[in-house]
Length: 79
Image 1: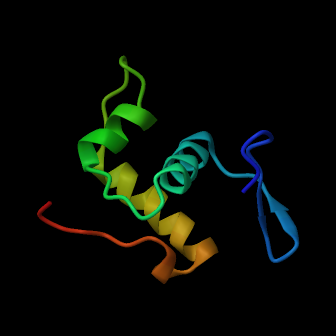
Image 2: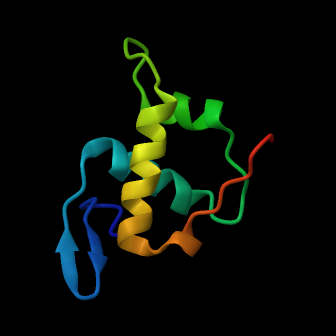
């Protein structure tokens, strides 16, 4: 992932992601090996005038996993 251009390079291909997925990927990479709460992710991804959605967040994670592989993003339920 190139932070300055916000383009994901995967298997020698440049992939353009939707803005929320870019924000999520960037947040995860900047906090690699750290736990991020759902609330923290909501604060970072959604603007103050937007209603955060857990279903949307799950969809963004699912889409990133399709590209990167399931093992690259790990959930911790109940934390």
